[in-house]
Image (cartoon, rainbow, N blue to C red; front, top):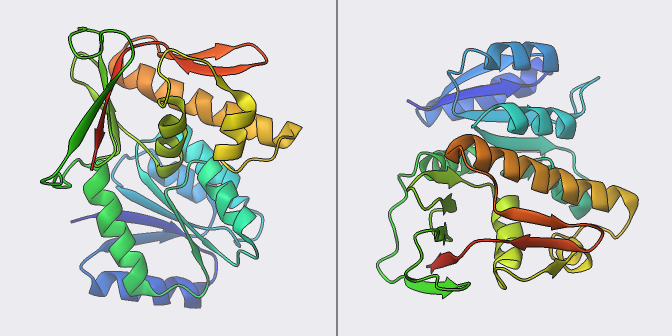
Length: 244
């Protein structure tokens, strides 16, 4: 059974979502605060984390970023988001989905099920798939990585796969258009819908830093995402792109 941990400090809302998700055969534990959430997460028993960004005294985006840095779980944000920028900020923080209140428990359950299948690699591949080889000698080079747009994975030459968030997939789609070539920072900011400001640049740098660390920890190899100081980023190895 899928294990879900939810942070929500309003008992009525928590009970409503918990009841709805339980009806969908999902096991949900609820905690009232950021501290309780992070403490409970240490047990490593959960697949999906649902964070209410309106919890008093909690910055839901900051919590999402902390969890993404420490744990390989799915992250879903819910809140009274007033504008698309709030949801974009959620993706930048490492969240996989964002829902605007009031949340339909059936829709949330469907998102949880789909996200869990993807994270655990159980999604069935499309019967019609195409491969695109990029970079020097990508087809025959033993250093070739595989970027799979169906399963949302980046696979090292040794066969170790890293499961990606939607934000990481979008970043790699842009970066891997020209493997081995510099992609300008301004182009990446635009593609990720970050403003070309100090804040936007910090968001981009944080995304790259998290992705590098995730890949390096999973593959025990140095990341192939390279920084060109003040200019942008490049992917320094051959890559094969699997498209739906």
